[in-house]
Length: 189
Length: 330
Image 1: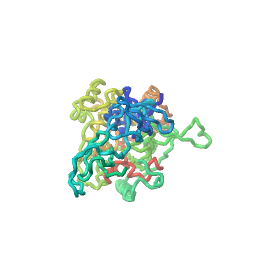
Image 2: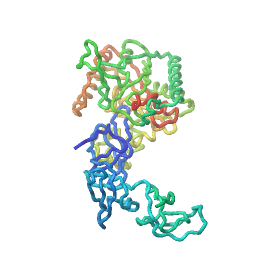
Image 3: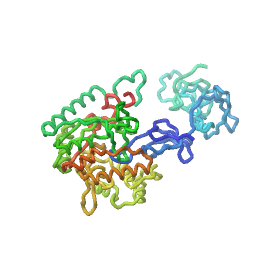
Image 4: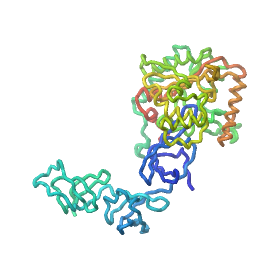
């Protein structure tokens, strides 16, 4: 088992706490001139996404979490599980709906996703920053309106709903920023 | 904190911060020159090191006869020991501006090498020295009308946390941390002073010195370090003070312990605590103990962090902004 000393703490470091993997969001060193030093951290639970505060005595060690990110291609969903393939080893892995989480709204077959592995198994999935998806349903817009002000809801092929300008129509491809869930532009086939 | 590699040669301080430091040092030197306090310089390297378990010294090696591997040299964590040897030799009032070194300390308010102003006033008590500290800090911040407050360590904990730091047991301290809403601390394995330090740094410090210079004084005797102890309101207190401004710890002062036997006993107790925790046990400063045995004049002394004073003067929250080069690009 690998361990980190608090001296090695920095943003992004992955540690184990009470059986769950966490990522350090923020690390603050606090110490009175004459007295006990502490590392006061904010850490994100990589299973639940919840951010909590924790204080360590400086110099203490904490177990390292075997967590790393890898690019994987999303292959298909068999109705229960999501199948991904490693880009270099071609090894296939399955992820549950809980693992995939919000990414399910954005990804479609063959997209390259950032899959976070914990002890070699998928823990969470991050979609590409930008995806191109087809609109399956949106109200017909007003002809000639190209300003985009106001907008209307549009349902995409993955089931996600985004606001699009009035001039964008059903069956068109659009580019969406998955970090904000916002329409970026029309896209070509 | 991390500079792109192509820019890594660049200073972490801007031109205004360099200028502010130069101006501050000129102000300090003029202040002490007018007050008749002698500027001195003492070695950064020493055969002995601080024993305080909360301070870790950096160690180095000298390629000279008599300084083989078993005789390392330590970079000082404060110039206190050498300055007390000067005082014992009859220097009179002295001050020093120097770099000090503390292993493992890095954060927005900490840097492993930093600048201290340390000075000693023979014949003065801590009250008089606190007045002088306040006068110098007001001058340095160019805020002549800044009010000054003073609170005892005990009253601070009693009023803010409803806790008597002289009486509270471990369970009470742990329960207080929970009661005030500190999260992620319940499982900490700390001794009494550790819990007090936790409450001080996590709860109290951010509120100290909001609108005025705030001195905290009369510390628990277990946190005396190199201060004398006395009875006050029927409890033993250390004649020690700390200065806070805008939540930042700026200075630490003592009525200096001059009893060589008592000093040796405290050093030994520190080493015993280090041994119990598996920390390195550096050699005791026998030269300091000999100087105390010879006779240290009754005096009060204080160390003031100059980088933090500059942070306050410039309104910056990251110590790197007042350092020409932070350790990451040193």
